[in-house]
Image (cartoon, rainbow, N blue to C red; front, side, top):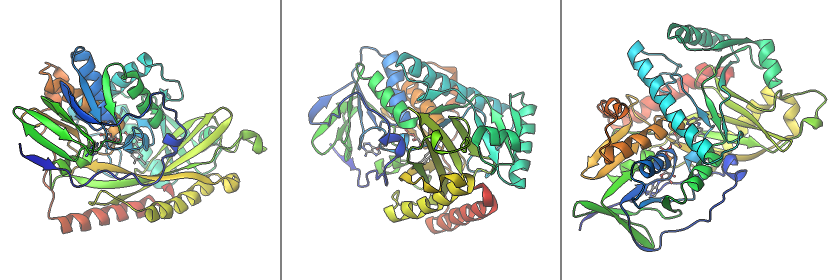
Length: 448
Ligand SMILES: Cc1cc2nc3c(=O)[nH]c(=O)nc-3n(C[C@H](O)[C@H](O)[C@H](O)COP(=O)(O)OP(=O)(O)OC[C@H]3O[C@@H](n4cnc5c(N)ncnc54)[C@H](O)[C@@H]3O)c2cc1C
């Protein structure tokens, strides 16, 4: 039996505030000894747990094992800003774009299919309104350029018959309490999740249908007959079929090398504060969710639970092919995020950032997922192109359907693409990506 050694394991730098304030109801279990299953899923983020849920629907009698290198919700799935977005939203274009009519219609249909899948799980597993909130989101503009981008995006949405509403500066002030924004573009179809709580509740809901092993990194994956054996430090899992749901780390399993871009983005969450501390509603409504009108700007959310409000800011993208960033980098970005907070909410000068963290994204040059049967009985649901709350949910469901031979129209359309395109030589890619990021960040200016 010859195996592929996985030499690079995921590193999650900084503590995610979402994870820190969430609760878990099932104890952590590590892989210990030899386990046999009908299915093995490696990676317990949106893709892995969605694949597990779909498999449990399609093959209710089968034994499904899910393993993750870390505790669930400590990785990117519990570190994101929680925007499940239905209308097209391309990170790599530098603008929110609506492409050709048929491509756009398909993308919206796929996004809504994934959001519905998540909504059914949320209802079945009793997730709270704070965990899964179909509130919609606002593209907030803090510059003239941002206002123009919003208008352009509003025209594209009107062109495809999508509901939206433009807000002026006064409406933005009423919602957020801040004078910072000149306008906003509201779209109602986005769902806002508490990402760590969503992932924990999803795993807890699946508890009776799957065996989940955490803190159990897979360090070798080997072919055994027509099936597979995955080895961790203290145990191994044998299964006829395996789904890889490890996002960019699929490269370390020997697939899609030279085709994936490893990018990090960063977030900070304030300490809790009470509205009673201030003479006026300096942060507006209890909950709101702002994407930047310029995609390189700051994503800002406010949440409130038990009378305590918090603000979460996500900014910056960095290209890090090593798939690791330092604590020092996180601290540097956190200092900038504190300035962004104060620029928007001067009254919060005394409120510190309690948590700061970084998280991995996987992008491909042509925005295609790393999906399909990559070797006999080995399936990939990876490379989410930065929007994994929805795209990885979809990829996980599609991988389960592909691996079970389920006939589905969605799967046929999802499988049609040619996969991530090849990148130029690494030095050129590094120079190219870094200069595009830098230029787009400078252009975003006050949106950041
Ligand atoms: C700050 C930030 C903000 C973001 N905001 C948004 C947003 O608002 N909306 C949105 O849609 N997306 C957002 N994202 C992106 C989103 O978090 C990711 O797209 C999503 O988590 C990808 O899901 P996934 O299941 O594909 O991969 P992941 O969540 O990365 O899960 C993969 C899992 O595989 C595990 N793994 C890797 N290697 C191994 C191994 N060898 N053995 C065992 N397990 C392994 C990892 O530990 C990990 O848990 C954001 C990301 C960040 C960092």
